[in-house]
Length: 268
Image (cartoon, rainbow, N blue to C red; front, side, top):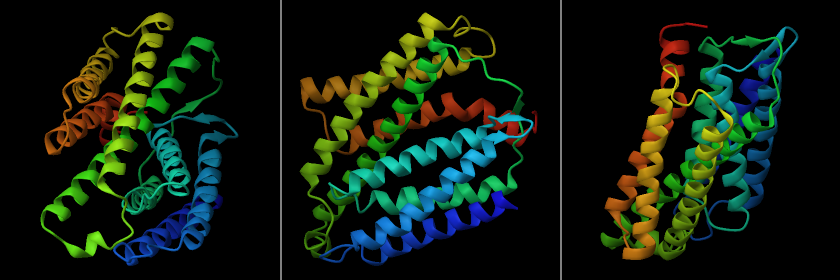
């Protein structure tokens, strides 16, 4: 009952925060930061409590894909909310809050019970997992910045006066933040992969090889785009689309097989 209550509270306040931001998306002063922070904070706290109660159970730890997705979503929501306090992120907020609402509600209906009686804490494994999670979150946020860049650029090319006088951030600011996040995320993903090869023995084992290959493919795409931007000045729609493709490949690497096994095939 506690998990259901926390889920409803988190999803409700995510929806309220999303609605508030969207209602003033093109307003010159933008959404009220105070209202946004209050609504999102309630959602974030409820989401955190939901995550704690979902993972840590009396009979062990539930580390199913749903709970891992809830954790990843929570990190992204907290990061984007924190960034929005200093930099305009009006287009990103409804995306992450809306996804948070959908994911928390979906967690009630998707079966997820992979119980571990104990967790072996090894510094190498913890380092690899931490770097992988952090890299993924930053690269997903970079992808969202890419979508925001594409949206603003498209509206400006159409000479949409509403966006000129809106609270949305300047295009050059979005672009600069996009490539800063891309560079940071690519560096972290590099260290995450290196830590995996150094500390883990089964990176190319049969059950993990697809994750390793997809992660390497995603890393290669991100790295090429980052270097291309620095050396050749690559930018614009083709770069944004490429970043989105790389993010999709990385998501498949992190969640693809587990989603099929746990959600579609119900193999726990």
